[in-house]
Image (cartoon, rainbow, N blue to C red; front, side, top):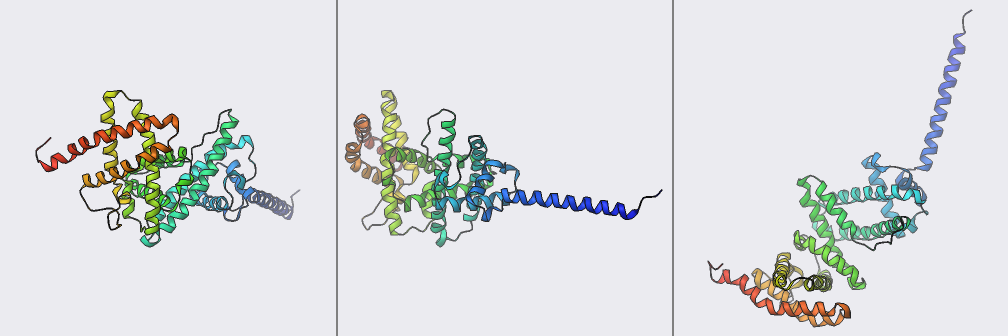
Length: 355
């Protein structure tokens, strides 16, 4: 007895139809849970962060999520922009946020290299707004993770900059200069467009040391890569002195902890640092109101330090009582040693062959 070929074909088509229906049903379910990032709701973006390992997705998907995330964070800051995550999801969310943060930085840095000079400040200002919103989101996430682990939350608003340093180092060396320029220019844009007087001294002290590291890497040259108008320069000058006050307070704590024999070398090292930063580009005002005088390095350093010495009485008076003696002590020793330091630096130029 032979089977009917038509019966076999019917079975085949029914099976195929069932598979198509199942696949379509699965796809519809999947896309409803993880819709296209460009139009995803906050709840859907929350699922992307909590339920997917984004390291297994394409760079196109990651950047699409970055775009949507920053749109949401600029509307409503922090975790409030998304549904309350389950405690078990926090680790995956953290890993995905770090991944997307790196993708964002590398993509925006590459884009910045193509931005015309006239448009750089507006481009960077938008990125600064994103960083502030993203940083608040990440801070709240880290605080929640620490509480879950029974630890006190940390208030580190600048740890994204530490992460960026690691991302730059991990890239091929040929990319380092461009990435660092993008970072330094963004920091300068922030200082030229924000009023850090609104920030508590603890944050300024943290920022001062972090920006000092950037200055060690040549960040002051960013002033030559951006078009800064008079309003930008005025804000930059005010913020620079606020950060210098915070930096000086930090150094005073280190200074008083040193043995007597190491204190003068410490002061000279700090003056060497200030000299290498090129702060005269933003902190030295000439008689005609122009910044960044084309004078010898020692003359420019002396003018910066002279302005610093003039502000020391106000800085000392504003220091909390438990730290005031340290700041006053460093200020006094700086005054005593400045002339000797400047003589050491200028004598070789005045008398060639002098060690």
